[in-house]
Amino acid sequence: ITQNDLNQYLSNQHILNRSFLSTSIDREVAEMFAGEGQQSKMRYTPKNHCALQYSCLCQYLIKQNSTAINIQSLSTRPDEKEILILPFTVFKVKAIKQNYLDDPTASISIEIELEECEDPNDNKNELENSDTSRTSSLSSSADDIKHIEEYQKFKQRKHRLYVIIGVLVLAILLALTFTFIFTFVIKKNSTQNTTNMPMPPTESPLPDCPTIFSRSSWSARPYKNHSNLTLPVKHIVVLTPKPLSSIINQQSCIREIKRFQDYHMDERGWDDIGYNFILCNDNEDQQQIYTGRGWTYIGTHCKGYNGESLGIGIIGNYTGIKSLNVFKSLIQCGIMQNYIIKNFTLIRYYASNDAYEYYLQYLRNDTDLQYSNQGSNQTVSCQ
Image 1: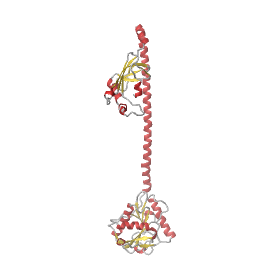
Image 2 (image 1 turned 135 degrees about the vertical axis):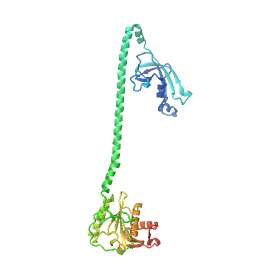
Image 3 (image 1 turned 120 degrees about the vertical axis):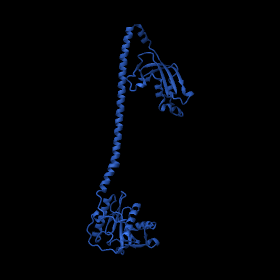
Image 4 (image 1 turned 120 degrees about the horizontal axis):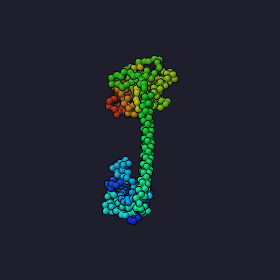
């Protein structure tokens, strides 16, 4: 109870009970309910705009049988020894014990002793004759049964309300769970299945070489003519052709590679796609290597150096660490298979200067690869 509630309980003050009041004939049970929960802790809250609360234990002295009903047999928890005090009963405050004054940590802060005010008319009628008393007793019993039935109906309605609330909360949780699973799991897996399947065919990787997808993996057109390279080549050319659309997945990569081949053969009049290899980096953070003209055929990518270089086109982000590692693994594969000399030279293509500078800085800091640019500031360029 709050301080405002406590102010109503003055000595000899009369208190009207306006509703059903669940009590227990066992003081320990009552103390357990009065002492538990937040109300026993809030008495330590500093005084502010809110009234201070106390844990309170009320002891009711019942003088008339019609005032209270023993419902221990009907209670869902018989050990509570529940007694139901009926509404509209008047009690007189006999004593108030303020435990918190002596012990602020007491589990029960306030103890109030109340005594039922008897109805003299009812007592007079009970004493006049036993028949009338017996009739009153029967009437009281009928009223008791009626009150019990009303109380049971009230508890049933309360139970149904809790069940309905529980079902609604469960339905909301299930809906949120289904939405989460559909959005973040099923949809993601569906996207991966559509973007990654079927996997394009690959050439059998050579020892110490990364996976390199063959020309058939991107449905390359037949080339018109191929000329053999003089191996091993001395130069590597990095080119960054601009895709027409964003590279979302490997299907987007294949579409762009086919577009480059069509442009090179139909618009430029070349015999095939100009690059020896194409590295594609998509938004799913996958890096794949596709065969253009391959290791042994002359490309069309760097005027003046086509016959002694490999042209590597990079689609998408070329600055990521995974992209750099894939580029390095391709170069190491060429060196191991004697397609590239160990002391190769990186060539700057005029339209891909940023990529050239980026990869040059990367190679200068890499101890696994050696190339002629490493020891000088000379820049070798082509168009």
